[in-house]
Length: 254
Image (cartoon, rainbow, N blue to C red):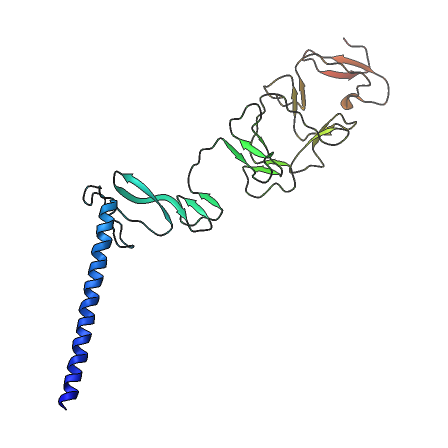
């Protein structure tokens, strides 16, 4: 019985010695890490804790911490904090923690040239002179629904301050009404040059004044001119009244 009790005491003593030794070892290791950190000028914080600004008044030594996947940033002398750059190992986000492309920027971005890395001949140079870029596919402006097969689809008003050179079919350059492309169109250089739905003013910016066609300036007709409201069953005189309107008369004009 005495030997058994002594044995138990011996085991308990050995366990106590091992426990105390482990505590001393851990404490020594912690002191060593802190000493090395102080010598290198780095103040350590738990991984889930960001040292508050001015803790104490940013280094030296260096105080800081961060969040997983955020790139570190020096926010002041001796201060490390999170930057706005987020890297999840596959994509990089600026201003966002959910990048959907190799680089996703949430907010305004300033750049001189955007260039296709696979085909550098296609690019967008905002403000470039004389050429601002070239794109390979179709372009839709002002609408999210795609171009529906058009090379350029613009939803809204457009203004061209200069020459508009349009090359279309082999025989003519064609402008078509988007809503009724087969009914209303303008084909330059074609035998059938087109049809328009509204009134037309030529040589004046003030509208047509209600006339279907208003031409400001001289006109020349090289061919026959037929006026449907002057037609009749026999020949007649074409007269002009005081308002400049033409009318048909069976007798000579007064």
